[in-house]
Image (cartoon, rainbow, N blue to C red; front, side, top):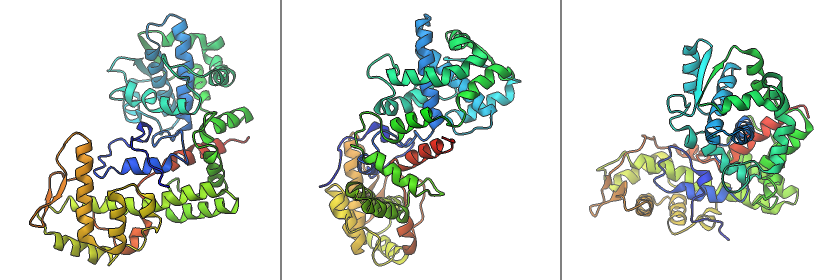
Length: 419
């Protein structure tokens, strides 16, 4: 059985990715049965914390007759970013603008929902609201519908864990902070130690059993509506039991994880991990070779095929035997077969066909790559240049995340606590 979704999951989108082969639809559909709630950008546990606390405070501001609770959230997101920057953190949206403005501010920064104060080009869509709300909803943290509100469980968690931390600098139930967030513009003094430290305290490392259990259930295990049916929880246990210095997946590492799953009797997880390995054994070299082809406008097909053969080897032995049955048709199984068989002229033609299909599906745009009737390459769009991979390096290629780095990152953040 091939697991494949025809519609691209919007939570999978890799920002800035041109994806001329439509690989995103393939790797995201392959990764989703293992990791059902996270995306490529939701790697930050403090990001989720900022979202949860901000939505709760915005709800209070709304009840306090704020004209726009979304504006209140944007101000909170900015405040949290400046405080995290002051504490030496770097892993948050808007880091560059925050750093530049903090350096010029002389200790006081302006916060508002107006474009001149936003920390991103469009903070509503490119910040936490745009990137973390859907994953948080999938994790059972944000309720369905509008306005955007926390679920009762998430709201109770924020009230019990995070509001008391804010009270030290902002009064009972953070009432002074709620009033500030309801203003059109806030002047925030980074030198105001009590207020700054109270916000910073929200982002202290996870230490209590309640925090560990809450975040593990909702983020690591997929939440109460876990679409993976428990596979994500078991996959996370395997990742936790076999830590790696790199948060990025690799073929040897995932092969070991699949073997561990088999040993524990989790054959369904083992099969899905092996599907990921098989998928990437084709997607990674095909994507790199396609980028190389986009630099060969006007070259003859046979000449380019000879270049591939000399550099990449007579055939790509690292293509997993499962690939042709796992990958969706009609193009990807043919790409896998051409790679494995060393049929480079056929590989080039099928990559061009695949690109043409992707462009038509995107609204009729012309293909980036074509093979003319005279067996020449016609390139209409040139991507970032890429060198051909040496044959012995191809087995090491890994291009796509399958949402695994995000799960590893959240696991590490939870694991830093003492609980």
